[in-house]
Image (cartoon, rainbow, N blue to C red; front, top):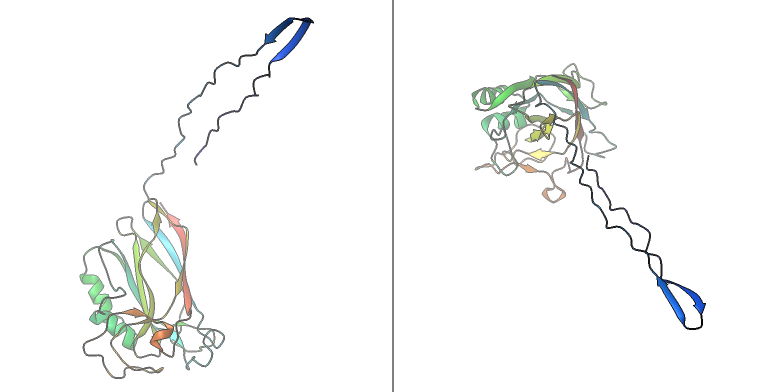
Length: 250
């Protein structure tokens, strides 16, 4: 908290007064204020201890529906298996403008995460590998493959970044996720984080329909966020959210 000390404004000096004792005698009276004194107050600071290990709850909301995507909702609309990791700043699983790794390609094209999980295990600077092998479904999707929309994970202060990805299914190579989200602020764990999910294109297929695979891009294009100009039928609209809630910190 910053405390601002404003200088106290004293009253203006009294105006000169005139007292008349006769036709030719004038006495001028003035009042002199004492000099202004400034008192310096040292700032008050509070130092919090460094953050220790913590645990987060992740709530996935899939909003894909006729209300948000009129005429663009296939049967069994879902987000496929969700994988990722907590990690250090220099570690990257995927990024806009970069080509998809084989693991990200498999995730975006098929919904499977086996290769991506193996890539994560081989990376330096990874804290907690994450893998939830079930669908995260919209309300209108009824399938035995749909699982819990709420999961939990542990995070260490040495690896405070979070990356996640899941296929938009069915699709040729579209996915949602978050890349290198910092879970701390000023060295402390953030208590509530909400992340908007927009469709991304892995750049590996040219098909534009709600079905797997299609013609391959050779060479693959870099990962992009889908926009109105790209004209994919999924569209650029918001398709869901991640809500992160700190539930335990030491």
